[in-house]
Amino acid sequence: MSSVIFFIAAIGAVGGAVGTVSLRNAFYSVLALVVHLIALAALFLLLRAEFIAAAQVIVYAGAVMVLYVFVVAYVGGMEGPLVGATGRFPRVISVVFAGALFVELCIALIGTGIKALDTDGAPYKVGFGTPGAIGQVLLTTYLVAFEVASLLLLVAAVGAVILARRRAGVPDTGEVSVADVMRSRDATLTEQPPETMLEAGGPPHR
Amino acid sequence: MNITWYLVVSALIFSIGAGGVLVRRNPLVILLCLELMLNAGNLALVAFARAHGNHGGQVFALIVMVVAACEVAVGLGLVVALYRRRLPIDVDELRELQG
Picture 1 (cartoon, chains in turn purple, green):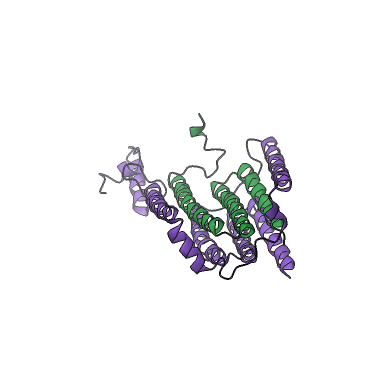
Picture 2: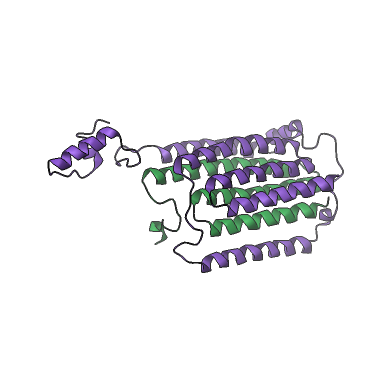
C-alpha cells in the first residue's frame, strides 16, 4: 500500500516539476509548482515527517505561492519563445547538463556505502516527527539555528520592502497619472518639450 | 519503500530544477526552479532523517524552508523593482552587470 502511494506521489512531484520548467505562461508554472509541493508533502508523510508536511502545505503551497501569484499578476507572466536571441545551442547544452547531473547523482547514490539506504529506515518510534518532538529538538539542540533563522527573516523582509519601494529621486515611469499626461500634452503644444514627467508636472510636491 | 527510491526522486527533481534555471529566461520562473532545487534537497534531508531515526534532518529541512522564503521575498522584490523601472523581465537582456 505504501509503495502505491509512493509511486503516485513521486509521479505527481516529478510531473509538477516538469510542468514548472516547461510551461510557457508563468502563471501555469506557479500552479504546477503547487501540485509539486502538495505531492512532496505526501512523500514527507510517507517518511513520517508529519510536521514538515503540514508546514510545507501551509507555508509553501499556501503563503509563498500566493505571493508568487500576486507578483505574476502584477508583472504579467507571458514570455516570448523559449529560444531567444542567444540561439538554440546553449539550451541544448543546458538539457544535456541536467541529464548528466542526474546520472552523476544516481551513480553517487548507488555507489555509496551507507547501509541504511537499502532498508526501510530506522525502526519507528512513537512520536517521531510529531510537532511536539520537532519543537523540543528545535528549541533545545538547534536553538542557535532557530534564532539565526528569525534574524534572517527580519533582514529579508526589510530588504524586500527597500527593494520594491518607490524611490523619490528616480522618476517612476511605471505609473503615469492622467493629470501628468494632460500636462505634458499642454507643454508640447507650447513647443517646450519637458525632459521628464516630473518636470512636466511642475515643482516636485513629494 | 527503500530510502534509495526517495533519494532517486530527489536527484531527479534537482536535475529538472537545475535544467530549468539554465533554460528559462523569465526571472520569475528561474525563482520557481530554484524552489524546485531547494525542495529536492529537503526531500533528501527528510529521507536521511528517516534512515537514521534522528530529528536533525527534519529540523534542517525546516531551516531550509525559512531560507527559501527569504530568497523568494528578496527575489520578488527585485522583479517588482525591475518592472517599476520598465526594464525587460528577461535575464538574457539584463546584461549590464555581466562586464
